[in-house]
Image (cartoon, rainbow, N blue to C red; front, side, top):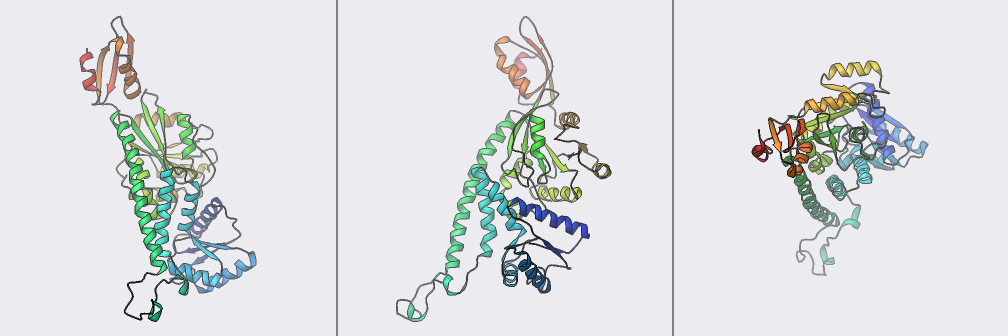
Length: 414
């Protein structure tokens, strides 16, 4: 059973939000039976949807045989308890649902650690117990028979659990920091070699991995599912002008992405923060593409990537509504329209990438001896080779290079 509170926007917005919640629930492995939306100025502080709607929800739960209620929002610990008391089945909020999906899809050690940390941050304020079974404190003559005033500071089971969770969270943070150092080292190596980088971002299931595969010819997992990609994939692409660049496929975003996940995945999302260009993929066939664009930009703002150039890519053009697509193009002037499935628009996208990325600043005319073949190879991979001619004394090249190549080529300048 799904339950949502409509506080702002249109009825269509509320229905789209509940439809997305249904897709999330199905991704987590649930069968969605029904859904209710309650119109309120703000969520009820006690039961989230209000006491009357909660009783109505209980009747629907009984009639359908549902065993779980999923709420389209983040509930306080008190709201969870009180709503469960009314509907008499397990209540899960949107945050817990997304965390569960992430836990199912995490593959790498870093991804699993990040999800576990986010789950613990969510769980910590929501630990609760029932009656004396949760207490390890003794009072009166129970404490060794010595009476009140003779015992040390006792600790309830819930306090013990909280302490264990905090200890585990500290350990996970240290592990994630150590793993992010490895990625920073790799990124520094790419920067040292003057390899431009592109970060692919977008709403979940917008076709980011499909686009990465289409651009690079790689075999990154592609599924028609929410959050199929959690671990960032870095692939190399050869541009039309001869340069090599890296493309990083990042985790998909979603409306109201839990702040625990943004914090836990910060080190992974920083791949986008270190990019030369943000490739923002949008599912043009979605019912609310502008809402998805806003949700993605909210998360990008949280990780401080507002100053990086952004190219909006309207994907799934083959199944998008023509009028909607035209309206989107007017709203986002810096865009390209493609279909990763059919290949439509990919040539234009490749040309745009070459023009958008920073170009090497120095143009040099050099003659490199044949015994320095490794240097020529590096120039082909890391610089822009404008012309090449094989002469009797060596290879004559006109190249555009960055500052790091200039000292290496000075001895061979003409």
